[in-house]
Image (cartoon, rainbow, N blue to C red; front, side, top):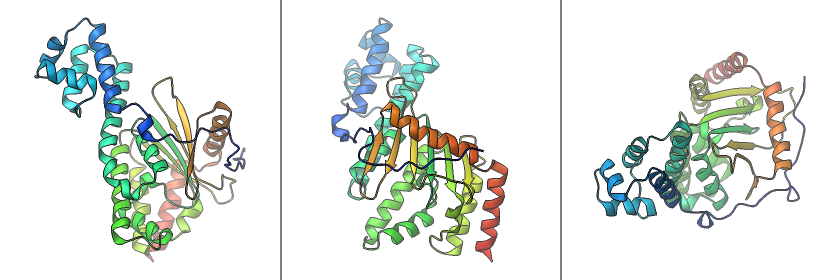
Length: 298
């Protein structure tokens, strides 16, 4: 049986540092460009397309220029009008999700470091997210009570408002990702013994993991204590477009690296592939979660 090899993240790795979101093209403008391309490819005028969204030519023009927030109804009405195929719709879905992300997470700017804001933006574009955590329940699967207990443990000087903001951010991320994006969550079995909050908080958190694991797009698997696994968390994202097919995210104490170069990506992907081999099967993972729940209920 193969085991995951150790590979410490370091500054010498062939990685690309995160670029500020302002340097990236506006998601709304990118969506508008895509819609305009489909309209022009079909030989339609702005006036003809505007009828599909019950609007004026100027409204259609603003939408294509990314000058006004796009309404999902308008975007999907245009997609149907243009008769986009499945592949084209995937691009539209991701751009629309990214546009919505840019709008919703700005409200958490005061409690969100720049490197994490970029990850949140990327989550909205992803097709699949694979995550490994060795110390805590993955953020996208944390209950509000567990998240609050964890934040209070690691940010002892945070104000009540800061703690509440971080917890709301995690809850919003969870709601926006789960059910839409395929999530594979590997978790070291020792996380079950790391108390975050009260017995009730832990019991409810583990019960939530068991419940969410029954969803079609969520997979939760434990890595047994005796198995060798990476000593740090890894997040790997794949995307539906060919230009940026995948990247890895490795968070450090006060920073993060975004791995995009092929050689480094191969290493991180190998670590996760090894976890697929050594992780417990779903039934075994659920059994150990159930056993841990009973321990916290005693």
